[in-house]
Length: 251
Length: 245
Image (cartoon, rainbow over all chains, first blue to last red; front, side, top):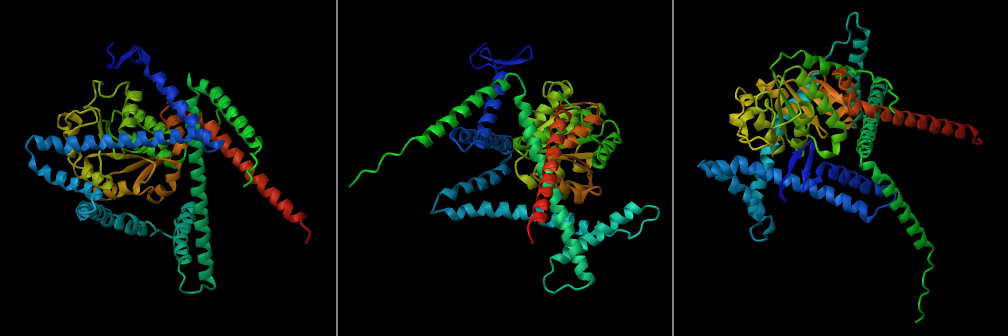
């Protein structure tokens, strides 16, 4: 096999006789443990893992974006579709960000990006998150033979009105309006609670995913190695703390 | 050793399964990968379960990514479920991985207006040569959009759901679920709630996988937190009652 060739051999991906999948598992497990060493304290190892992650993610994104531009604009341009020269040249103006003298040229594509982005979102968002959501609250107050839906509809209708009233500060609420605003406050608190619960569940899921990745041979071998390294770091720290400070020199 | 704590099927997961079950064989479904590596432990098991269901139902799958990490997971899902991606005999006929489209929501709008807007797929094949892509002219030709996301679903509702009437299913992280709920069931016909949703779906498609394996740990962690909350509150009440007036 040549030095650069990469191929599948009997279910294994090999490069120069090295099992790439095995290497991937060891690297992934090693980086996971390096990142988790932050739990003891911030250290160079965790920072290296952090930088590798950011660097790899950014590099991967840049390459894919460049490939997209190449496939969809440069290739058609080279085949005679000259219209693609306009967006390509226009986007190159973004690099004038680094020029103090011609910085104004950078503003042109930036304005176009912001303008198009805002135009696409605002017009559609008015419908998606305002009118359609208002429409969804137009519900019957009583549903025959279905008490659960009746209660659900009442909670939605009065919950929305109450939550909106809670944020109306121009008038002091008294009597039934105060009760409705209070009901809205409890609805908001329940919503935040649900969001927090969901966030907690997501974080636990992420830890489970990482632990599952360490449960694969030979990644779990790294666990005792990491434990030993952290133990050494703790002992090192303790010894450093115990070391008496050198007396200050008298002037 | 798994304990095998029961995982009940939530209404949102059941309605997702029911909707896909109701799709006629040969319908084209688009899977939009708006996910990064950071959410893979939650989203990838969902993708694997979904793709299995789509394959079992003989539905055509168009995979497209709006996050640069997306194509990698799309490719992995094809390999896990079909056994191969670009080398499979059905590639380009029953499924395709179009790769990453740069541009965020503007790219979504362009793809919804014309799914053939991109020239090459993730592996460098000409999109116009792919059989699955030929009959597609707008997003209306998709019978379902599966959004795999850890950031938002609103943008897909804005660009696919509202203007083109494409039914949407969310394969989302647990954090995102409270933002999907306002669209359910009118715009989003169903959704999977993080790892738990994936575990539910694995049960429905009878493909026990990594999500179901992780649910024991998830349930145990939740139980522990519930115990801590109870102990903390009991302690607080006891201290309050013992305090001299």
